Each structure stands twice: as structure tokens, then as C-alpha cells.
Length: 261
Image 1 (cartoon, rainbow, N blue to C red):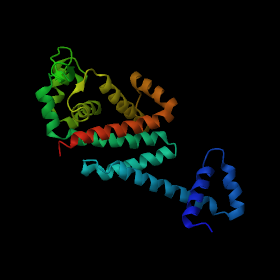
Image 2: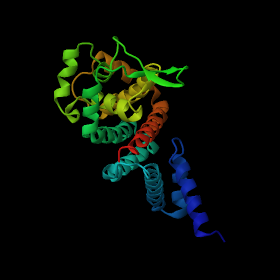
Image 3: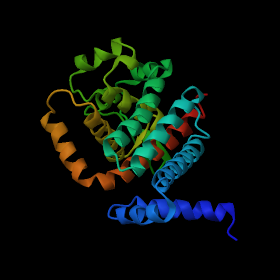
């Protein structure tokens, strides 16, 4: 005789099969055999299993994350994100995924250390290069690039001075995100060139634009429209690109937080 666990596994398997596109006939075949309630019962069991799996994944994912004040909200958003992914709801998936990045970015933007460092070092070159003679990375002077220009994406120093009069939490999301990336993710040093920084920033910005699918307000800019035309036809790839980005971002930020908390 089959055990309870074996039966539950069988029910889960049958439910997954029945909910796949094109397999509607499975439910129709089961209902006459087992009675009308079976369809609803299988759906309820399926949803229960998905939520339990997502909850376990979320708790393990954020288990060692240092921002304890955010942890419960991050877990809740992760559960929503995974549930939307499994239901192939890309717009809500992107919203729940972005909300985790947004919450972490906003929390770190409130820290005095972030603004203090940028103000004191805004004219420094953000890049370091390996010095063979000294056997370590060194920061060289540069007239083309500095930390202020990297974060605010402005060439005019007056345009950089203006937002620095405000607390970082009031900056545009792109500015806050770039500041958090530089200070926490890269630990204030970008090795050799800007390619790695741009790669991480672009993924975060793509997620931000995809999140706006859920917040349609007014016309998109040409730049936004270009991003969405890349994402939407390739959404099945971007499910995993965005998941990888969240893991990479949270892991590397958390490493820096060990020295901060």
C-alpha cells in the first residue's frame, strides 16, 4: 500500500501535468473517474505546494542577509516573485523582483557613510589598476572620470554638486542604485575599467524598466522603449537573468555589510 508521502508526490505530479498548456483533457478525464471536486482539490493542493516551496526558498535565500530590518519584507517579496514566475506572470514577477532591489537600495541610501564618502571623494578616480611593481591595485588620477561623474552620469560638476546637497534617499533611483553599487557592491574600487560596473547597472536598470510594465504612466522615452523591445520578446530568458542578478547583487552587497554592521 502506498504511503501518504507517496500519494502526495503522485498528486503533485498529476497536478503539474494537468496544469500544463494543452493538458486540459487530463482534468476532464479525472473528473468523471473521481467526482467533480477533484479539479478544485488538485488546484488547491498545487497552489499550497508552490507557496510552501517558494517560502522555503525565500527563507534560505535571505537566511544570512545582514539587513535584519528588511529581511521579512524581502522574504515576502521573494515568495511573490517565485509564485508569479511559476504562474508565468512576467509583469508581476518583475515588480516583486525590483521591490527587493529597491528596498535594499533605499535602506543603504539612508546611511550617512554613503553620502560622506561620496562628498569627500567625489573627485577621485573610481578605477584602480594593478601595479606589478607594488603587487596590488592602485588608484591613479584622472581628468576624464571621477566618482561624482560615475554616480550622477554628468560631466558638469555643478550638476553633480546640486544633488549632493540632498540626502541620497531623495536622489533618483538610478543615482541611488549607482552609488550603492559603487560603495557596497564594488567596495569603492572598480578594477581596471567600467565594463563590470555597467553590466551590473544595466541589469538593474532593465529590471527597473520591466517593473514599469506594471506602472504604466505616460509615454515611454525612446531609450525605455528600446529596452522593453529587448526584454518582452525574450521574457523567458529574462526570468533567469533577473534571478541571477538578484543573487549576485545581494551576495556582494552582503559581503561589504560584514564590515559595516
